[in-house]
Length: 167
Image (cartoon, rainbow, N blue to C red; front, side):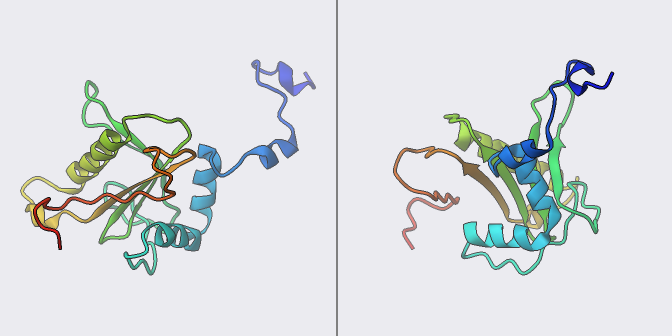
């Protein structure tokens, strides 16, 4: 059984196949962001220039501090019969939460998916009896290989605010 392609029907992987995988691949994005916290900080700082990020202290969703890479493919599943959420990469620096998602397919439901991810993070972050003031700022970031709103922009930023307050 020297031929790898005969083993359980798996394809014959060659060492150079990793060279053909780009950053838009979920595995590659997760691997790169896991390797070096400075890459994480630089990426977040580039996408959120008004948010000062000095360092990342990685934590899991259950708030246990880690001296390890960010959570990859982090899942929140409230119950077996409810829709859960899985984030490509999740960071929590103790003050804020960041969910990063790579989007290769043009799904028209991105705004609702963003809302759902943020809600899941908030529900997970707030323990029973805690006041809502304890909710941390949460950033849901989609890195898209397409223009999701077809307006010719490379960056779209949304925030909750009062429509009557123009300041």
